[in-house]
Image 1: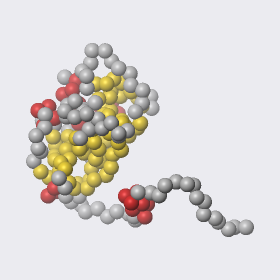
Image 2: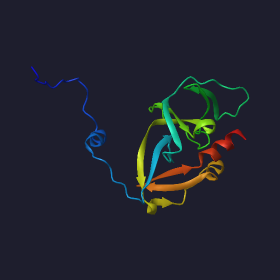
Image 3: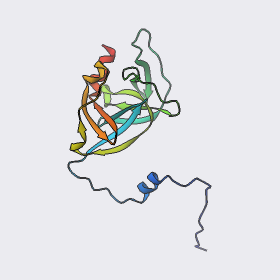
Image 4: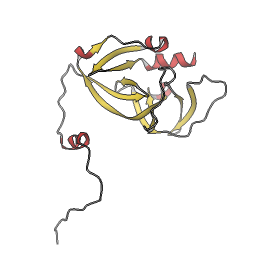
Amino acid sequence: MNATFPLSLGLPPLSAELAALTTAGPMEENPNDIVRQAFRIGHMRLLAPFATASELVEMPNVYPLPRMPANLLGLVNLHGRIVPLFDLAPLFETQHLPREKRMLLVIGHGEAAAGIVIDGLPRRMVFQPENEILPPGLTAAAATAVVATYANGQDAWFEFNYAQLLDQLVS
C-alpha cells in the first residue's frame, strides 16, 4: 500500500514567471551583473542592494507622532523593535497605486533601520554596467540622493542613498 496518488488542491496554475523559478537550477551570475531588489512607489521605479533592504512585511499598525513631517507616517513595532515609517510618494510627486497591496520594506539594519511604504512585492532585477544612464528629471530633494539610474527597456530604475533620502525628510 505504498501507492501515491496525485492530489489536486484546486489551485490555479502558476504564472509563467513563477513556474520558471520552480524549475530553474542554480543561477550563474556574471561578476559584472548589478543585482538589485526592485520595487515601486506609485509610478516611481526604485532599486536597493539586497544588503540594504533587510525585511519585507505586510503593513503593521502605525502609531502616528504629533508635529512630525507629513512623510513620517509614525512608528511601527517590528518584532519588538520600534522603527519609523516613511511614505516617499510625496517626495517623488507620485501617488500609491490603488490596486497594489501596500507593504513595508525595511531599509537598513538595527538602530539605523527605517521602513518605507511600497506598492506590491519587490522583485530581483539584474542590470549590466552599460544599462546605467543619466537620471531623468527628479524633484530637487530626490535628485541629490541618487546613487545610480539604470534603463530597462523604456523604464528608468533609480537607486538611492536611502539614509540620505530619509535624513532629508526629518530635517
